[in-house]
Length: 636
Image: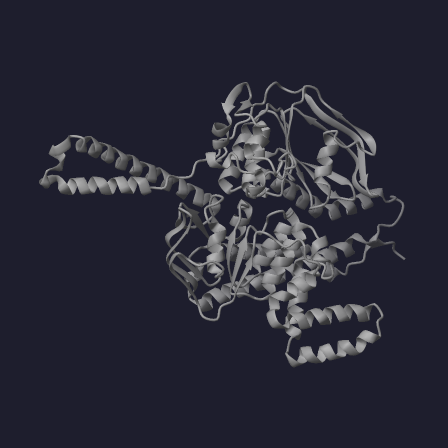
């Protein structure tokens, strides 16, 4: 049964149609991903469904009694509320009562006898309105999203604040959850926690994202907003790309035939009075209609034209570090790190928010001196640096002045190009050239910074979070450019697909200043880490055995025979559970899954949930038994 339906819905911004008589159905349990170019109206569509914005025409139907919660693209940064106070707001009227109880409980825990009577009164009030279950929901969601209840929102990172706002939306247990770019500025661990939370959510989800891994992991259906039209695509993002390419080719062929007929009719009408005889009035009216159709036709939005002049080659060795360390306020960011980066290497840098990825870049490039050890840059380097804070852009100056400093031309490699022509390659309309940078969207600012750094030759490209706010199509064009770039690349990113497609080795900030080096991109790092963890206990036990004295009795395992047998059987059991889980996930990902009878849908979802719990127990049991097996005692 549908939860939400749009019928012949239209919405325009000025003369630009965002929605052009579109139709949309959102069914129960669906997870829909809304994609489209920046500025096409995706956020506006979410606002319409959330009844924050009215349609110009058409109708929005929402099933009676359903609850909708929305996570906006921007999250508050100036509130002094605690994370608990923020999350509990999702419960509505009882939020103030639970916030007081949480605050007073903390006072009692800190030894305040005066707060005991107040706590007792609050407990009675909570029982009276039957709010204990709601309180447990808040605690559960805080634990699931790894949030510190007492942390102050204004003092938290953007990623933590975004998780808190998601928790507020989830705790209300909505029937439909609307998410606008939920992964923006999240690190990879936070993105995976977000994925797990959404997969565990039993309602419907409509989300906007440029994260292609997230799309493939979550979406049961893809909805594209393109030139005012909504089109539904079942299956994965890769399948969408193939179908979309075929549709665009068909559209171009249809337009070519139309334009050919129109040109022939224009030749005919120029014959003058002969064409205007009464018997040809129908043909004249048809031509006038064709002219209107051609004028109304919205051409596909242009693509960013990315190019980069490498200039001359750098030296063979681009940079070297030897036992480099760097600390900030006593905290180790880098500890005894040594590496050599050669010409044409493509190095990705991964780590949690705040772990020091940007600091590592600055140490590698010599912008920060290591507290110990040394860094040495190679010869003939031309560096292009994309910084995630975009400090190279002056928000008060115009787009033109940021790029060409009041000049009408910009030097691109060895050619001079007009500013308007060059900026058009990055999808800036001529009327935007003189706009202040502070009026640009995040995606427009990223495109402008790319235009600025790509205007000069570079053989070392340093990109610190370049993918934030870029639409998927621009991301893919940037991937193509980096793949064909013959210089050296240093890339910081949380976009897993982007890393997999652009880098050949990865540096991972693993905590306490340790930096691991891995061959390949994000997925390769995951595989290598998983294999290392799986083999670690076995390797450790083998080392203990080989290092023991041959004259001493062999150590005796603490495991009973039954436990040892269970430990031996657990890997096969876990593999069987994972296979069943994968099979059920494939069923749920099928776009037709939710069209079945609701009892059948509920049964499969229950089986999937039970399998997840069984797997978690099996993993915990395996870890317990494996740890016990690793501990040995000498015989009596």
